[in-house]
Image (tube, rainbow, N blue to C red):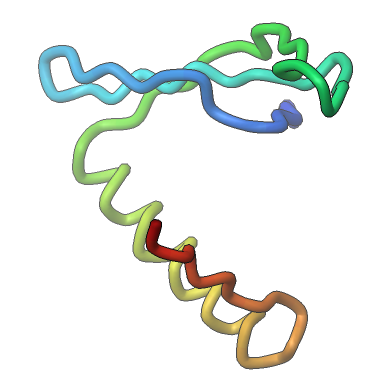
Length: 78
């Protein structure tokens, strides 16, 4: 099995019921300009797999919040 690390998602496209997700990695961060990013590869999921993944991630995040590992930041309205 292969493990791929990514700092984030650059884009998502839906083609014929398949979600293609483009991953990115941060190269450098300078507070005066946008971060430099590099493509980190792609992965694809069917729509049902995306929904199941969303459900599992949401449950895991909720557990981490309950355990105090994470906190929710509520965006301020401007």
